[in-house]
Length: 317
Image 1 (cartoon, rainbow, N blue to C red):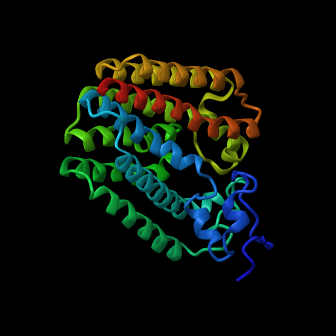
Image 2: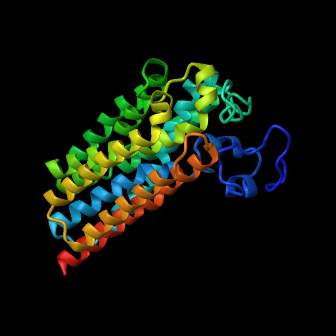
Image 3: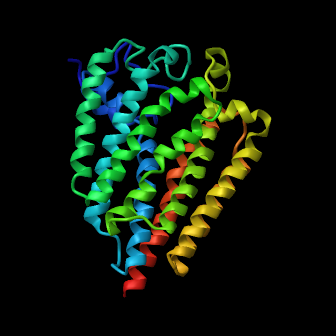
């Protein structure tokens, strides 16, 4: 085993990892391929999976009059999001290992780079999924069943880039599932504000993942990988604007249906303003800038959550 801070030949950080991340600086060399499979070196993804869970939890807390969202519930969703995002990414890398070898940004991932075998990756995926299952089983029966229902969409996602130019829509259906889960965990049922929140989160995911796909525009064409970025081409900014507009409408409808007050509306305003800044900034010929904007969506989501959480606390006061 090499010293924890040393990166040897063949163990270079993947291109879209944050420079100087803890995995590359501190993790033992033998751990790094598995931590990269789980995307621990790229935390933006689990934030984007987690935030709809937190939105829904805060929206339900306000609607139910229970005050600030339960820290225990928020922590459970955090553990589940990190575990299931890692399991999903590991599954994605197993399925996409041949395609990943053809794309500059992904050919250094652990499986195509030969650092981990597909069998080792599958065992690691199962371990992560068991952590997610343990979290899910702490919720009520309705929420447990709803959580299991998401697996069909998750399983289909890696194959979509081969058959449709809309894989971002399928990712949106999977990554936004938490917008239903928080409400279900609170009430043991769904109501239309949760469904509206889910719809808004789906369009938000489609928008930010279209921006993310700008990074691979040229390589995806060579490899035959489809994406909304390639579909929209020069009209990407307009298309992302439409998707973000639909996201704002969906979230606004959810907040209206749940009777959210001024603090929640302020959170919505911050969220929408952040999306507007992204639209003014995005360029289809700037892959590095596209990655920066993709990562910034964590902050957009946190603005909305903060508003909803404060609103829930104020309504119960």
